[in-house]
Image (cartoon, rainbow over all chains, first blue to last red; front, side, top):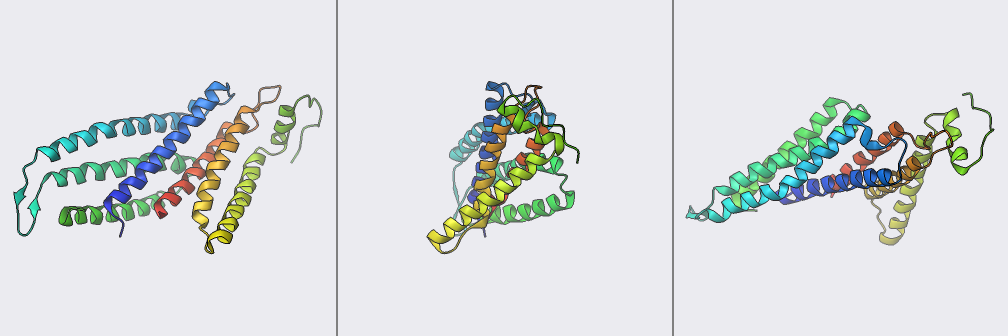
Length: 142
Length: 108
């Protein structure tokens, strides 16, 4: 079973890699005055913008969640320390996982005309894996 | 498949763009062939080194290489201003590349 930080880390790295590819393509084509630059495509420019925005907001989200976590006073539970902010952190970063996936899969989905059922199947698998990984984080703290 | 006459070839750009007049998807086929060859070379080299090879990671690495090759192709144009790799062909290559990168990272 994959750990939550592995799932998040992998998707964040894919997002970073795809964003880097977009950036390289756009910069190289712009510098060399390509006849048909990829940024002219509405789908690509939209995805690039959204991915850039999501990646950019990640720092703010992380620092907000860390702020909440560091402010909370841990209360003693049955054989453990209870900290409720971990649930908020899980919810926030769980949502980011789905945002990343939806953004990355958008271009292949539209360009290649992949069936919606295939994406739905992958998404359901990702949902179950994320929920179980989050439950492990809530229960055992990592 | 009707090809245009092999005339007015004054530069390397003209020569490279000429096959797209015969078959619009020619460079898609060319890059698919490069992708398969590169994947198998990487896979076999890894197999020699580590006994077992990882085909998915070979495909991921090859797809990045092919995206960069196709990017170079978008910059080459003929005297009429037609690029060697046209935008929708490049978009196909890019989309397939993303799929392989996704599979590669999900497998890790």
